[in-house]
Length: 186
Image 1 (cartoon, one colour):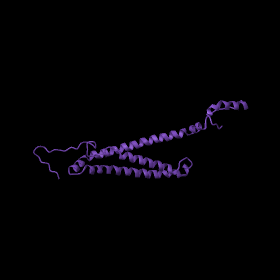
Image 2: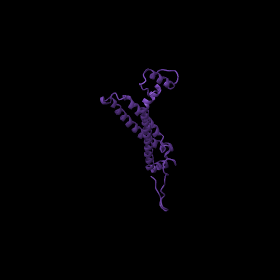
Image 3: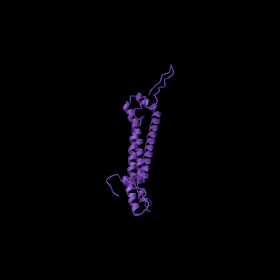
Image 4: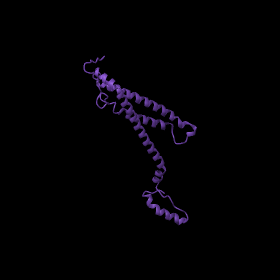
Protein backbone atom coordinates (compact mmCIF):
# COMPACT_ATOMS: atom_id res chain seq x y z
CA UNK A 1 0.00 0.00 0.00
CA UNK A 2 1.37 3.44 -0.87
CA UNK A 3 1.12 6.29 1.55
CA UNK A 4 2.60 9.74 2.01
CA UNK A 5 2.70 9.43 5.79
CA UNK A 6 4.28 6.92 8.13
CA UNK A 7 3.37 3.41 6.84
CA UNK A 8 3.71 1.84 10.29
CA UNK A 9 0.90 4.04 11.64
CA UNK A 10 -1.50 2.44 9.14
CA UNK A 11 -0.83 -1.10 10.33
CA UNK A 12 -3.85 -1.24 12.67
CA UNK A 13 -6.14 0.11 9.92
CA UNK A 14 -4.82 -2.51 7.47
CA UNK A 15 -5.36 -5.33 9.99
CA UNK A 16 -8.92 -4.16 10.64
CA UNK A 17 -9.67 -3.95 6.90
CA UNK A 18 -8.38 -7.50 6.29
CA UNK A 19 -10.31 -8.81 9.35
CA UNK A 20 -13.53 -7.24 8.07
CA UNK A 21 -13.21 -9.10 4.76
CA UNK A 22 -11.88 -12.45 6.10
CA UNK A 23 -11.45 -12.92 9.84
CA UNK A 24 -9.38 -16.11 9.38
CA UNK A 25 -6.78 -14.48 7.17
CA UNK A 26 -3.56 -13.80 9.14
CA UNK A 27 -1.78 -10.47 8.75
CA UNK A 28 1.93 -10.61 9.50
CA UNK A 29 5.21 -8.96 8.58
CA UNK A 30 3.87 -5.47 8.15
CA UNK A 31 6.83 -3.26 7.32
CA UNK A 32 7.72 -0.45 4.99
CA UNK A 33 9.43 -1.10 1.68
CA UNK A 34 12.61 0.49 3.06
CA UNK A 35 12.57 -2.02 5.92
CA UNK A 36 12.07 -4.95 3.54
CA UNK A 37 14.94 -3.77 1.35
CA UNK A 38 17.19 -3.23 4.37
CA UNK A 39 16.34 -6.73 5.67
CA UNK A 40 17.06 -8.33 2.29
CA UNK A 41 20.41 -6.52 1.93
CA UNK A 42 21.55 -7.18 5.51
CA UNK A 43 23.57 -10.35 4.80
CA UNK A 44 25.26 -8.76 1.78
CA UNK A 45 26.17 -5.64 3.75
CA UNK A 46 27.61 -7.81 6.51
CA UNK A 47 29.69 -9.75 3.97
CA UNK A 48 30.97 -6.52 2.38
CA UNK A 49 31.90 -5.06 5.77
CA UNK A 50 33.65 -8.29 6.73
CA UNK A 51 35.51 -8.35 3.42
CA UNK A 52 36.57 -4.72 3.95
CA UNK A 53 37.80 -5.53 7.45
CA UNK A 54 39.88 -8.46 6.22
CA UNK A 55 41.24 -6.39 3.32
CA UNK A 56 42.29 -3.67 5.77
CA UNK A 57 44.00 -6.24 7.98
CA UNK A 58 45.76 -7.69 4.93
CA UNK A 59 47.04 -4.27 3.86
CA UNK A 60 48.21 -3.56 7.40
CA UNK A 61 50.02 -6.90 7.55
CA UNK A 62 51.64 -6.26 4.16
CA UNK A 63 52.80 -2.80 5.26
CA UNK A 64 54.19 -4.21 8.52
CA UNK A 65 55.92 -6.99 6.62
CA UNK A 66 57.53 -4.56 4.23
CA UNK A 67 58.52 -2.35 7.15
CA UNK A 68 60.23 -5.34 8.76
CA UNK A 69 62.05 -6.28 5.56
CA UNK A 70 63.30 -2.74 5.01
CA UNK A 71 64.30 -2.40 8.66
CA UNK A 72 66.20 -5.68 8.47
CA UNK A 73 67.88 -4.64 5.22
CA UNK A 74 68.95 -1.31 6.69
CA UNK A 75 70.26 -3.07 9.80
CA UNK A 76 72.26 -5.49 7.63
CA UNK A 77 73.67 -2.64 5.55
CA UNK A 78 74.58 -0.40 8.50
CA UNK A 79 78.30 -0.79 7.91
CA UNK A 80 77.92 -0.20 4.19
CA UNK A 81 75.88 2.94 4.84
CA UNK A 82 78.50 4.12 7.34
CA UNK A 83 81.32 3.54 4.87
CA UNK A 84 79.43 5.32 2.10
CA UNK A 85 78.83 8.33 4.34
CA UNK A 86 82.44 8.29 5.55
CA UNK A 87 83.64 8.31 1.95
CA UNK A 88 81.50 11.34 1.19
CA UNK A 89 78.06 10.10 0.22
CA UNK A 90 75.39 12.65 0.91
CA UNK A 91 72.37 11.88 3.05
CA UNK A 92 70.10 12.14 -0.01
CA UNK A 93 72.16 9.51 -1.87
CA UNK A 94 71.88 7.03 0.99
CA UNK A 95 68.19 7.79 1.33
CA UNK A 96 67.61 7.21 -2.39
CA UNK A 97 69.48 3.90 -2.12
CA UNK A 98 67.11 2.62 0.57
CA UNK A 99 63.97 4.14 -0.97
CA UNK A 100 64.93 2.63 -4.34
CA UNK A 101 65.13 -0.78 -2.72
CA UNK A 102 61.72 -0.25 -1.10
CA UNK A 103 60.21 0.86 -4.40
CA UNK A 104 61.56 -2.22 -6.16
CA UNK A 105 59.86 -4.37 -3.52
CA UNK A 106 56.63 -2.39 -3.87
CA UNK A 107 56.61 -2.62 -7.66
CA UNK A 108 57.25 -6.36 -7.49
CA UNK A 109 54.27 -6.70 -5.12
CA UNK A 110 52.01 -4.61 -7.32
CA UNK A 111 52.99 -6.59 -10.43
CA UNK A 112 52.35 -9.88 -8.65
CA UNK A 113 49.01 -8.55 -7.39
CA UNK A 114 48.02 -7.34 -10.86
CA UNK A 115 48.81 -10.72 -12.39
CA UNK A 116 46.82 -12.48 -9.66
CA UNK A 117 43.90 -10.05 -10.14
CA UNK A 118 43.93 -10.66 -13.90
CA UNK A 119 43.92 -14.43 -13.41
CA UNK A 120 41.15 -14.23 -10.80
CA UNK A 121 39.14 -11.90 -13.05
CA UNK A 122 38.87 -14.76 -15.52
CA UNK A 123 37.04 -16.95 -12.97
CA UNK A 124 33.57 -15.41 -13.43
CA UNK A 125 33.77 -16.24 -17.13
CA UNK A 126 33.84 -19.93 -16.28
CA UNK A 127 30.46 -21.60 -17.01
CA UNK A 128 30.12 -22.92 -13.44
CA UNK A 129 30.34 -19.41 -11.95
CA UNK A 130 28.06 -17.51 -14.33
CA UNK A 131 24.95 -16.08 -12.78
CA UNK A 132 26.41 -15.97 -9.27
CA UNK A 133 26.38 -12.18 -9.08
CA UNK A 134 30.05 -11.71 -10.03
CA UNK A 135 31.09 -9.58 -12.95
CA UNK A 136 34.44 -10.05 -14.61
CA UNK A 137 35.62 -6.57 -13.67
CA UNK A 138 34.70 -6.83 -9.94
CA UNK A 139 37.82 -8.78 -8.99
CA UNK A 140 39.97 -6.61 -11.23
CA UNK A 141 38.65 -3.42 -9.59
CA UNK A 142 39.14 -4.76 -6.09
CA UNK A 143 42.65 -5.94 -6.97
CA UNK A 144 43.56 -2.50 -8.31
CA UNK A 145 42.22 -0.85 -5.16
CA UNK A 146 44.18 -3.22 -2.95
CA UNK A 147 47.34 -2.59 -4.97
CA UNK A 148 46.94 1.20 -4.60
CA UNK A 149 46.39 0.91 -0.86
CA UNK A 150 49.32 -1.44 -0.48
CA UNK A 151 51.62 0.86 -2.44
CA UNK A 152 50.58 3.84 -0.30
CA UNK A 153 51.30 1.90 2.87
CA UNK A 154 54.62 0.65 1.60
CA UNK A 155 55.80 4.11 0.63
CA UNK A 156 55.07 5.40 4.12
CA UNK A 157 57.31 2.98 5.95
CA UNK A 158 59.50 4.54 8.58
CA UNK A 159 62.95 3.02 7.95
CA UNK A 160 63.04 4.37 4.42
CA UNK A 161 62.80 7.95 5.65
CA UNK A 162 66.33 8.40 6.86
CA UNK A 163 68.69 5.43 7.13
CA UNK A 164 71.64 7.68 7.81
CA UNK A 165 70.20 9.30 10.91
CA UNK A 166 69.36 8.06 14.37
CA UNK A 167 65.83 7.01 13.38
CA UNK A 168 66.95 4.89 10.44
CA UNK A 169 68.28 1.93 12.38
CA UNK A 170 70.88 1.01 14.91
CA UNK A 171 73.63 3.59 15.41
CA UNK A 172 76.70 3.32 13.23
CA UNK A 173 79.61 1.82 15.10
CA UNK A 174 83.24 2.44 14.34
CA UNK A 175 85.78 -0.13 15.44
CA UNK A 176 88.80 1.65 16.79
CA UNK A 177 92.18 -0.06 16.57
CA UNK A 178 93.94 -0.89 19.84
CA UNK A 179 96.51 1.66 21.03
CA UNK A 180 99.69 1.49 19.03
CA UNK A 181 98.10 0.10 15.85
CA UNK A 182 97.22 2.13 12.80
CA UNK A 183 94.04 1.52 10.81
CA UNK A 184 94.30 1.89 7.06
CA UNK A 185 91.17 2.83 5.14
CA UNK A 186 91.20 1.93 1.47
